[in-house]
View 1 (cartoon, rainbow, N blue to C red):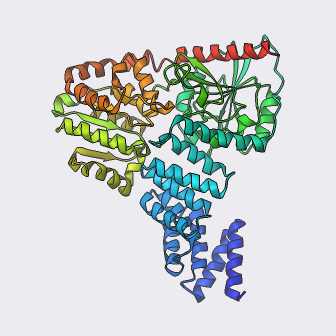
View 2: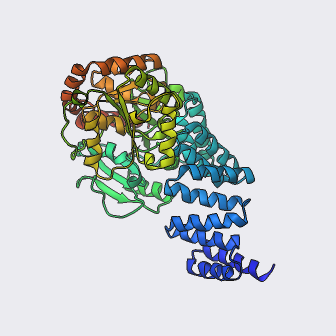
View 3: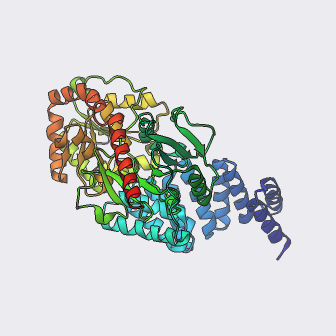
Length: 549
């Protein structure tokens, strides 16, 4: 090994051990002698990326690739930087190159999956994550993203979704081994009910959970949250003063389960099993009764999850049991949502003054399947003066935006009829965007969740296609609870016809808009009624356990 190679090896070692200054100094010294040294440039790119200087990282990686165009590692790292920068097309191109050079490189497949998902190709994303799993079968991040993307994939069946979740569950159970449930606590006292909320500042679960926490009957339940956040500290603002917050950031699953055992938790409700990597605690049997509820997309795949709270529409009796490891408990409703207190007032129907109807979808572009886009094109054809407003953070990426516009223009829709908007930081301003639209269109096969709740609060009804999967039925369930079951179509043809018919009756749309917020307040936003239903189910399953002991 020559002196330059030894120095480069030392620089990489310093980087891997977190000594960035030393790594940068050595790499810089190498470049003084050899300005095109790809390894030294790679080190500087890595150091820049970990320091948050992503544009600099991309510049170093790009220069390194001029000297080492066949380096799968550098292609993988530049793809990761592009993903954080929101340049999904560039990330996809470099990830694809990396997987072609070295098919055994799991992170390259993983980056490709994330890029494809950002570009709206959920099926390709799920396949890329599956390829990543083949290289590292026990990688939680690979499995978590694969299972999540599978729910968006147009061709995925409930059976396939169940089987893949169960494959993950069997792997976790084998790692964990048999775990005896903790002993039951005293009877006759308030039930000790725990929620597990990891990384709560990175997902929307608090919006579903907060109204429940504020409505719990604390004479019957001792409620606490075991949670963590990626940034910051302290008790989060959405936790009421009379609910205990236990910060478990940095805990291992074993440590967390031991803490819950020591605290005498009787029922654990896991409100965010939509990501597989959050579910592992259930395999450790942290409580005598364990329940998946509130924000989920499928079965957990774990035998240790005793129950899953759903409703009779999302999971019709006799039609869903075979797709779950859990026993299904059907509540009056699946979940509720926090009322957006900063939301602006609902304005009169915009079409009345615009002279045309504006449709909208604020959903993640990953949900906009080819079938969804094709159906929306046909709706726009039926109403030639109409517009379609698509709004999501991902649409701030010019490549992603161009990709979606081409899906419409390629079908003959004029580009000016498609309005694309990216991220709006201010919550009230974001919701005010609904005051510019008349009617929301739900994507399929994975429909809206938060977006449907927020549209309805803003007086915007949502046309949906009643699907076969859990997330393909959620908006239809909401519309049914509002007494608007006719806004849920049974097939694509009916979906298109319904859009044209409903959008053509402006008087009916205006009347519906004027009263929709109060209608929603009394039903889908009725947190007290939902919480009572959830509490009754918890008391029932606890009685069952007591009877069998």
